Image (cartoon, rainbow, N blue to C red):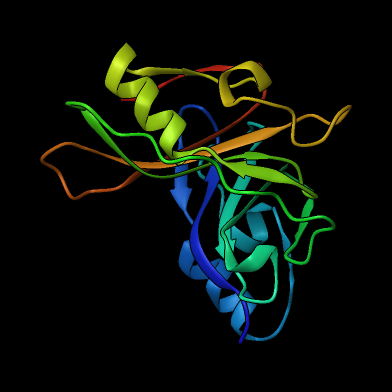
Length: 174
């Protein structure tokens, strides 16, 4: 059994696209390398540096738990990282304005599934997320710039939105 892509986002802090189906199509061919570029995904924000974040499962990796990875435009995600990340604890959401479907923070080699952390932040702090090691409870790979991707909806809407950015940015959901 291969990789199951749970969520994947490519874009910037102002424009992003859900690339889950494209990534699953690539992974379904047996390819475990996904290049993060406009040729693979199209360009959601021409002229701007994009970020790519992916959340996936493989029963042979990480005890079957989800693995979160991310990289910048021009990078490549290898779906067989060494070592794969651990999962984050599940938070109990309050009364949100946003529903976080998936959120990842990391590098092309290691990362965190930060979905519950983002949901908690939005439930308790409005519409912004500061993309940093401090926000997400650690550094998935010391000395390497991290990337963040989020797939979310407004409560009451089923239309998903997606954004992606580099570490050090405060992202405002809209």
